[in-house]
Image: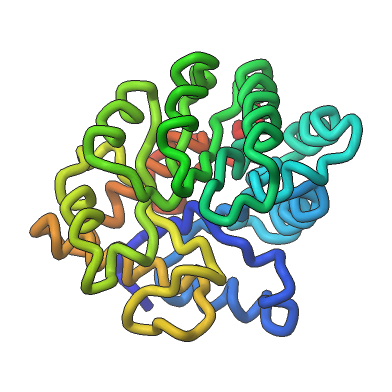
Length: 273
């Protein structure tokens, strides 16, 4: 049992990679100090699965929305569907939304339009946003500057930008979330950013089953492994793992407006206020 109080702020345990051991995965996470798992979505189907997970497990919350990879496939009326899902118990944010110019699985103009539509919905619903950004820093930041984000703020998920971009994002109201790549030996820039971020603006995540930390690289990632992200960032910052994890988990409680067991935050019933 870990002494750290951890939150995996971005997982995908609804997908097929966890079909054979999903409940065991949740148990292993708890055994490794993970008090809360937040499950992110990439289309309407996965959003429904995330809502179902939040209904089944007291320690799982949901993010609902459309990933840029899936932007070209959105059905008519998809925003209304997202809005309906976002009203369900345990849904704490909209996302993951944004731009991905690395794979370009949806036309860039379509990605931008779906991103802006979801940003507008989040502002209307007063929900925080979870942003996906890969090789699209310039266009993404331009949209955020022009359109604005919800007053609740948001999360730059699996951060891959520069230090200057992180500073601008934090001024906008974003938290910066760090994932498994911070443990990779060649991740010098990300390690530097993780060491320099204000302690009250940093989050940790797995993005499982992807981006497995170095110690288990080559294997499927899972929420239990968020402890390795916490340990590496704590090392970089010269802190104990327990102190860093408590700070990061407190940040998660604030941005998602949820209770983290053993920390002082709001209750689950308040998360849709």
